[in-house]
Image 1 (cartoon, rainbow over the protein chains, first blue to last red):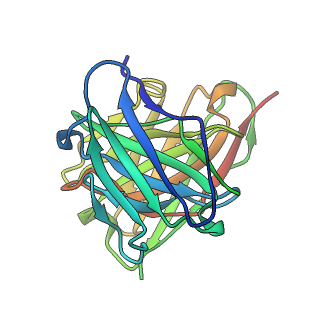
Image 2 (image 1 turned 30 degrees about the vertical axis):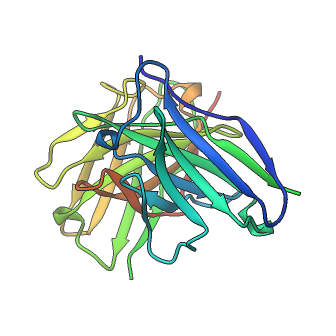
Length: 110
Length: 118
């Protein structure tokens, strides 16, 4: 069974940069997996940030960017702000209609 | 403006059945790809199911054979029929529009809580 891996947590200083990654338990992530990223604060529905590796969803600030770094998908927050403190989830498309979420990364801004 | 409003979640005993609804506005359900995603208390997001515009449906292994996704075009509503419910199905269930071309979830509802417990 394929597992999508994410770092459990990250801490970043206000104004700092943090890169979250999204990998596979077996194999490499490529653009063919159409990686997408979602932000969720407690008690709220997820919000779409990035899709198809690096396309920002409407209204998403340009301090959020997506890429492929090595064998993983990556979400970079440049110039972190206090309201970026959230959980971040990646999703990979596995083919045959199946999507798999990563376990999520909790980002703390302090 | 796209809006999704889920309903139908409640406390239900193990082994029971429940149907969730997702009322859509601002677009037509039957011409779109739609999905259900759930989140157990204190846990991460889990993809549950997707229905394509041609009515093909796909399910996570954890719910295959027990859950069924469908839609009522006259009511512009998406459904999730859940049978043989287990404690591990306890979660907030979100419906979302699914962009087939980019394989991502575009718009999300606010979710409805299903609690499976005796």
